[in-house]
Image 1 (tube, rainbow, N blue to C red):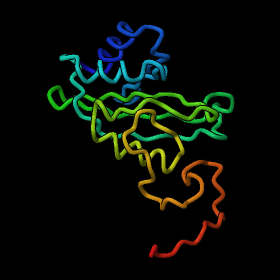
Image 2: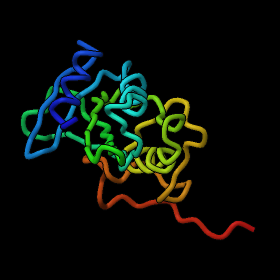
Image 3: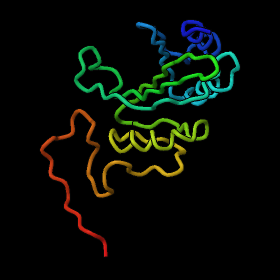
Length: 165
């Protein structure tokens, strides 16, 4: 099954819960409603002809001040899936509003999502509901803010911390 067939399969199965699909230079992408995310991820993993058994990456994009995205959701959480058996890829995106920056955790489907989700939380401030241990991964616990947000002040001074006795 090629990428275009995978997108067709998702739109046929999930209907309006797939907001849009597109393909560009061999990259096939589906934008999914947040409420359908876990169902779509599980379907991609468990359907034999799709067989996306490998979560290659999970990241986020901040579209603050991005031309053409001024009035849409500020963030997207992006999942890159790969099928070892079929050698095909798929990208899933979920749009996330700044005021409700949360999505369901994919850890029950792919345990490696644990680290990916912690990184997205740490860098962008997007919460993952149901995550078993959502805490900072790259920054120290007292760090204030999320440094990959486009509005993070680059000259911000952080609290000094010392060794704990």
